[in-house]
Image 1: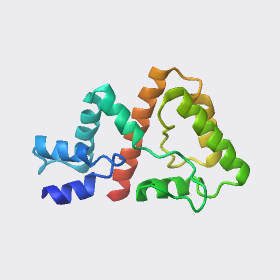
Image 2 (image 1 turned 45 degrees about the vertical axis):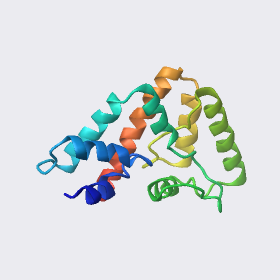
Image 3 (image 1 turned 180 degrees about the vertical axis):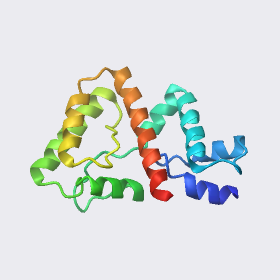
Image 4 (image 1 turned 180 degrees about the horizontal axis):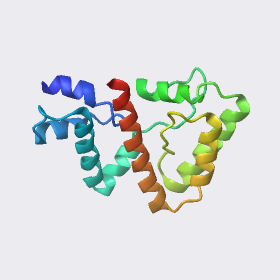
Length: 160
């Protein structure tokens, strides 16, 4: 597969981070690999990144629950994923609660709350953020990376 086509296909699996797909393209012979094997290489690449690079990857993710009419910088994938979880149709009270939880989370961990929302509803998202606010920084940092991998896998399955 040509580089441009490869990046277009795999570059959006990790939010705003096509450099991950580019690194895999440049360092591996990909012509005999399945999409799941390519994703595995991408996961390994992310897991081997230094702490600062992982933080930057985490920071590429948007805050959950954008107020109607304020779609800002959501990627097409993020918009679709949040819509499916009902985060695009929050009531005023729900939006205020999620905004408050997002702020508490950001204040505590210095990065946005990340969860693979596919298959979840808004109540499950609220419960998860409330529970995870009690985690240590290290546990939550690792959980964020795990959730980013889950998001990438879901996105790949949606492309297949």
